[in-house]
Figure 1 (tube, rainbow, N blue to C red):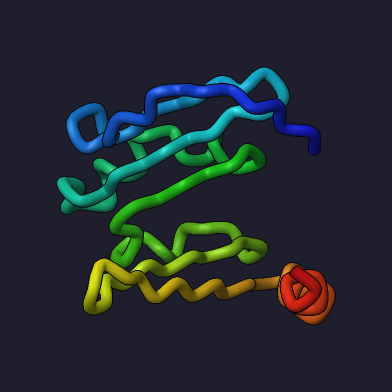
Figure 2 (figure 1 turned 90 degrees about the horizontal axis):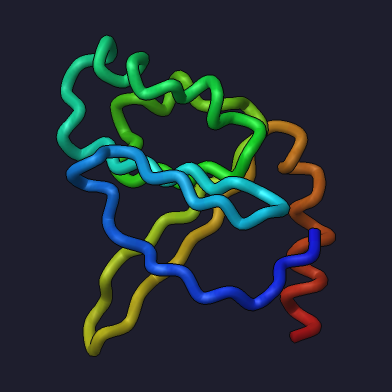
Amino acid sequence: MNFQKKKIKVPSPTFPIVQIYDLKTINIWHYDLYRIEKKKEFFNLDFDSAVGNCVIVEWPDIFSDYFPKDRIEIFFEDEKNNARDVRIKLFGTLQSIKEKLWKKLDQK
């Protein structure tokens, strides 16, 4: 994929719950599930249409059973001194590319 540098405002989707960013070559669906309590509410968010695009989900915990088997999860945890611990976990067939990914990251 070729992403051109493009500045866009990225507001928190907390109030609309889902925000869609059209980047011409790909759509990014950004969900904030913090206020969603019932699975019925989750199913009304058209998540099935988002799959196949780039999907970012904040507060995914209670709905993770409905996510695709092939996915990447990124975890951010605040640390001391304004630092963050970032963990990346690959699922499904993506697990097989893990070794190649780490080799590339080690080169940088």
